[in-house]
Length: 161
Image (cartoon, rainbow, N blue to C red; front, side, top):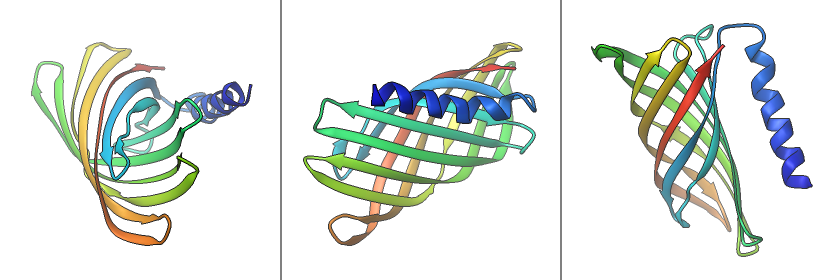
């Protein structure tokens, strides 16, 4: 029941801004590598052109009772170029923050990321995307550690309202 409540709250947080501007809402599957190893999971994604080039991602990952991760990333697309037809390239700057529980240990981390990706909009209201984002930050388990290197990647889609 707790998992469903958390997911409902996250959806509400993402959907409310959509009522006030053109917004892309979607989902993705993320692939990540960090000090814990493979760090993959589902993501809710929101793009709001009213804040040019801004993309917000919220991830909630469960792996039984041994692993839980909640993370947020927010990116600003600095470069947006059309490659050909409906295919676009973007390069951005962003940040991430996350909380992880694994094997009865808790870790909080935050840092910067550089997303590099491709988007294609075959029809006006549907966008497919894939990205890779090298990231570096600081972690706090059990003591402060820096740098915390990781690679974040995603493959997904957004519907535009």
